[in-house]
Amino acid sequence: CRDLSKTFAGPNRLFKRNRGVTAVDRVSLQVMPGETLAIVGESGSGKSTLGRLMLRLLAASAGDVFYQGESITDASGARLNQLRRELQIIFQDPFASLNPRMTVQQIVGEPLWLHEKLSREARHARVAELLRTVGLPAAWAERYPHEFSGGQRQRIGIARALASQPKLLLGDEPVSALDVSVQAQVVNLLESLKQQFGLTMIIVAHGLAVIRHMSDRVAVMYLGQIVEVATVDEIFDAPLHPYTQALIASAPQMQPGVSRQIPMLQGDLPNPANPPSGCRFHTRCPWATADCRQFEPINQVLSGGRQIACHRWQEINRDRSVITIAPP
Ligand code: SF4
Ligand code: MG
Image (cartoon, rainbow, N blue to C red; front, side, top):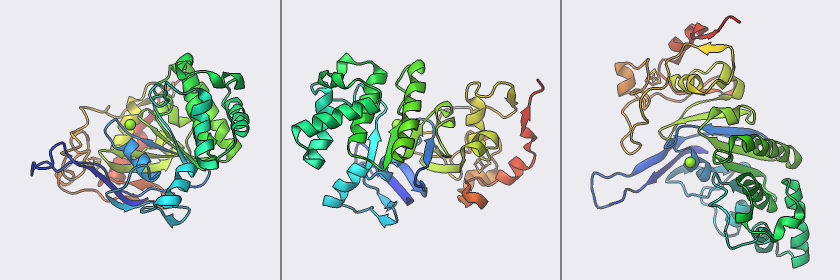
């Protein structure tokens, strides 16, 4: 996507001072075929909205979305229907995303009927196959969502997404509503499906622990803007942006033995309807200067495609000893 923005109107459009909320603000981002891109940020950062804009589930207020080189910003009709099949989403809440009055057969079989007009027998065979693919017994197809656990329901949601043979799968916090014990199973399932079907994935997450093991690159969002894009190793081992550094530092014990002498993230996310001037992170950044409060940093593209939006990133990272390895 290029310079992609989305503004949601405020509750009362007649109110002159109510300019609405710009949930996504001039974002440019690429997902490569076969890659898993994580979009990380606190709740309210606009990460789910960005994911939906990229899949054309939401229409952008400004900017463009491209798919395999083609602009799909204004795709409609048959082309949009085709995109709906190729670009699929898995929702955060498996409890809310499945119709309680439909059987698994109906839920997973719906796209097969809508898009492929498969016969009843063919649909049953495909649903059975899809259930086995996500690790559920085919015989459970006649059951209803309430008969399943959270992890099983998420598997049903994944089977439904796979039914239309997608090329790209967006997981919007796909495991954050699940018990910790079940999270790893679903993460492993997504990993193996990615290999099996050659999928490209976008994973939206607020926590870093989940994405460490399942993403190739990470885009860090803050108040509607991308502040850093880098490979997963760069993000975890040598984050450049003060916000990314704070996120890594405040993540619970991901690497035992490594202590990081970086100030933890302080304060709450400012109101997205009224974001701070200049660099939006300045109200929480330990490095903020008068310039940061006044001027918005541009998004710099470094060698290797890494992106960073901070006035002082070179200065801040000159002394990499800010990340220290504790003695054993
Ligand atoms: Fe901090 Fe300034 Fe960089 Fe923003 S531009 S992250 S306030 S140092
Ligand atoms: Mg969200």
